[in-house]
Image (cartoon, rainbow, N blue to C red; front, side, top):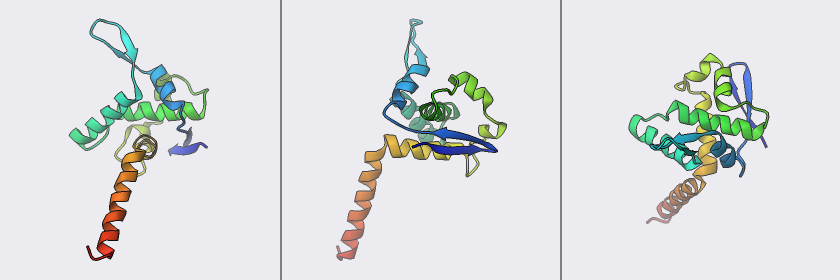
Amino acid sequence: MADIIKIGDNEFPVAVTAFTPIIYNGEFRYMKENGHTRAKDINDGLSEIMDGIETNEVPPFLSMAQFFWAFCKTADKNVSGFNVWLGTLPEQAFDMSADESWSSKVWELIQANYFRSATQVASEAAENAAAGAAAGA
């Protein structure tokens, strides 16, 4: 099922499936020191985001935009390549500081789909702590 991310008057259907990492890997590449390229693994993108949050307390725009594009492409196979798609975004898309920014919705999708076990562990720990407090521990 596709969700919708709105930027101004524009609506972007997004979805995350088992095929999303394949779409991501197929579009993004790294240039190695020897001049050859290799596919950018989705875990590389996740690491870039986590490093950006740890270092600057905000995720890097490009990495978040790459995930946004991959989620759009997953929802609609007719979405253009990343560079063309990026050029079609409305101006307000480049302000990630707004409370209702597309980046917060993309981050929610990333957390729900790629850090699921971490959120389950955190909620279980909170539940255990609450149960211990209720039992007088």
